[in-house]
Image 1: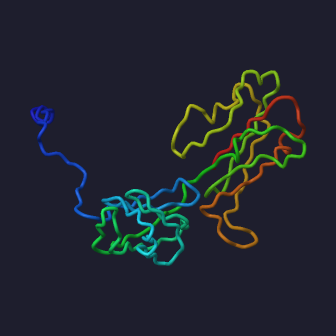
Image 2 (image 1 turned 120 degrees about the vertical axis):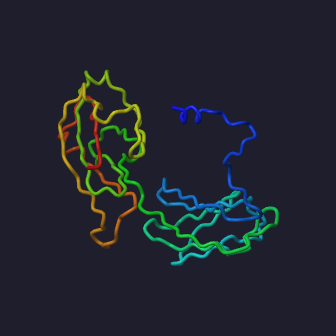
Image 3 (image 1 turned 90 degrees about the vertical axis):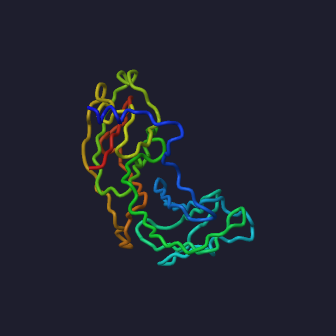
Amino acid sequence: IQGFANSQTVRSADAPRLGPKIVDGMAFLRLRIDTDQEAPKACLEFSQPLSTDSNVNYRDYIALDPEAQANVEANGQLLCLAGLPYDVDRQLTIKAGLPSSTGEKTDRDEVITLSFGDRPAFVGFAGSGTILPRAEADGLGIETVNVSQLEIEVLRVNDRALVRETISPGESIAEGSWDWWSYEDAASASGVSVFKGKIDIPLVDAKTKQSKRNTTITTVFPLGAPLKELKPGASVVKVKDT
């Protein structure tokens, strides 16, 4: 009990506290990885803003092993590399002499391992996910990343029950996150299930034998098969990774 009471003691305003690491001069601080987009990005953060001198080519201060072409862009304290693939680990060397806006330079080489891993698995509809019926339409486009099989359910909402439903564009939510919209509740009160099935998504191109890992794959789901004929009303299509 006494130990708990001691832990509640408020420190004085001038007591030492943990703060950001202070670095003298121009130096590399940390690596930041962004894998939210189709092409990953690696950003190198430095202790000072980078030089904006047009004569400075920052590609000269970067070496990759294995070698690869990358788009290099300086912005403030960040030097970002884009255009590299996901599934290849590389050794990245930041060469000494990289200049800051004040004229100071890094004093030694920095060697780090650059690894993006795999893109997070993703399932979503191409476009807004809301389409109008057309007799000649191929179907509904479904986009996936690193997903080998989809589970699909189609619910039919007739025109009378449609007044209780709201048709709005879909939203992309990261795996493991949540939103107000419930997958299980979609059209559950007014829709009748007319189709349930699974679709395999090949992750290797049948012709070229090249891997489709980490790329966005669009699969067209033929709505005509479960609907058979167009009637007044709407269809709710629910798709998830199995």
